[in-house]
Image 1 (cartoon, rainbow, N blue to C red):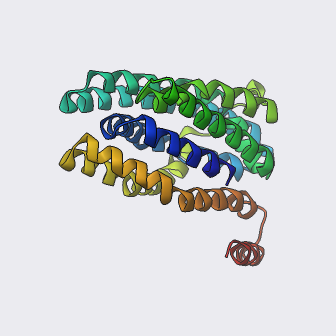
Image 2: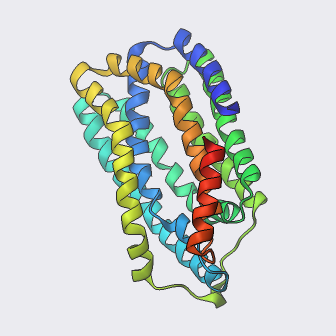
Image 3: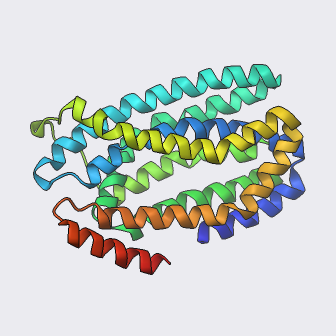
Length: 275
């Protein structure tokens, strides 16, 4: 809720400082970033959250190693996608923005296991504090840069600038370093567990982002800018609440020691509280 309040303030500033074309360019860059970033929701976090205690260190080692490979791949993929999109749109600055956003993927791996362990330990207050700090500063910087006249860059640049802040905060909230003596779990088991989760997340990402790509392709960048602005100012609130409730519920339900009856009882209690 705090994040949405700060974002509404930023939306008011952007509406007065940026034109539809500038919003459209920024929306295109961010939509491409969000579509590629969904590959980070590949089940490795869920694997850490529900790992048995005796295999936790090995699971964390494997997840950290695989996440480094995934994030490097995402950076390369985003640059490739950006080259195509910038060429089709005829906007050279679009490629520069996408290159800026791709650097975020190089920061992410060093803090992902820390965030997953916070979720496993159900320390959702700490995790929410880190997220609120990051997005709140992002929104504040966006408003300030827009007032300073940076145009579309005011939306894109803060996302890179706040990535190191997120990394420092999450590592402070839950310190973790690889334990080489614990070894790693089977790579085949890791990917087998991740495949179905990744497929589901890709479908969700397409459902939430392909509309923006279609609006931009059919109606142009100015129409996309207006659509993206209106979408985030309104419908985004329900998406944030849904995501927050899902994140808070998952570690409560993912305890591998629960019997089927206990799991169903927890699910019923969680569902009644969320309702």
